[in-house]
Image 1 (cartoon, rainbow, N blue to C red):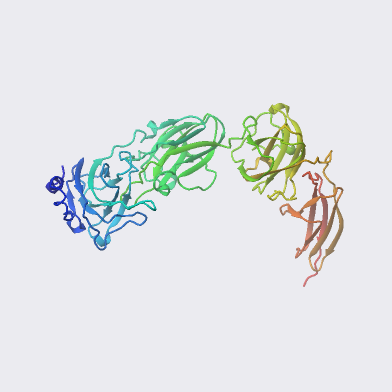
Image 2 (cartoon, one colour):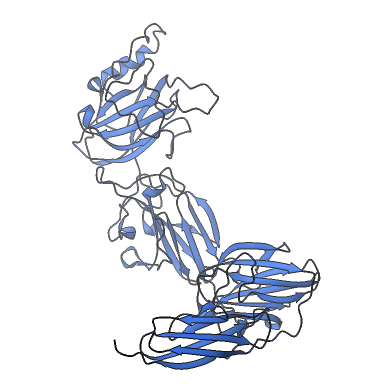
Length: 532
């Protein structure tokens, strides 16, 4: 039951429009209506002719109608409570504050339309942890948002206000986790209204507030897993984490790939292992509870093109800079060693040649050393190699004459299988490009031989200059000094400010077809700089 003034407010509804001409009695904050502490409670009232008083909060990002009314509620016990305006005539903006002075109110939660479990679109709903003995101020205003070119709503009408204790969700505890199956689920309900923290439960990613719900999933294969719970009203207030273990007190956090937003989590799953997924809310220092919403949980395994039997299919003759990744990719039993390296993290593509001629394929702008290989054949154990390349230096994108672009001849209607792997299992991101021509490439293609044609060492200045040559025309080069990384270089290479001592220079020629000289040209030299 609410106080007697609430009954009076209801009675006003039967006196006609003349009686409603005056502003509601609780129009101003100082005249706010005091609600009974006992739950549940409900009230039907009106905000017709209510006004916005000076200094009243107006909610940045919302469009208040300026017809606000005020209530005060002090709970008899500490509990989770849901306040809503479900079923009200106007769209509403509902806000809960702490404080007793209009100029120093602290907003605890606000909602302009229903994100909660009980409300329809036009109402508003807030769930928060109410502390016994604390006075909470409730503000209800009309929502005047409207599309461009349409009239603004009045934001006035009958207001239905309801307060009720919030029961925890069915998957509040790990033992009652909702079970997920398969390699992909989209937007599974993950509402955490009324959720609690059970004894022994970890603080998820160091940020969860203990308003968690649980899900259970057993990996059907070994691959990467991407979890997301970012569809709530405030994605930055959601925390998601994944664990292994047999009980809530023995959980181990699954190792994540990268530092991602708190509402996302990705890791490598092992076939047959059961993972526990927690969806929690960020802690509020004011209410003592986590943010509550329904962010929706989505799960997907990646990469989907890890196996030869499920490649990513290309359908165009030419394409530029399509992004991919081989993170969490595996190597299948019987899979060949691409470009002669064991690799271990391959992804597969399929492409059917639309013309007879030649094609150039590039795994470009890679963050790791890539291995690329082209095959024909319909079974993994019976593939015929066509061309391959170990890309010590990742070529640049945009179909230029960059090093390590893999060229091969094609026949119309033939399906080609292309593998991109990481040298010794390296992983990361890369783009792929393909260009075709009606002209055939000269065969057989062989890797060029590299030689250092001339050298000039200037000891006193610490300068070394090398002129490179190759056995095939149209070659490019990659070079390396001492333990530095391999880098693309021209036929004339110069190093300055070399330190006194022994140095080693290496170079490899790269042919037009992307084949790299397997035996680099090597020169060992000394810098004997005179003391200054």
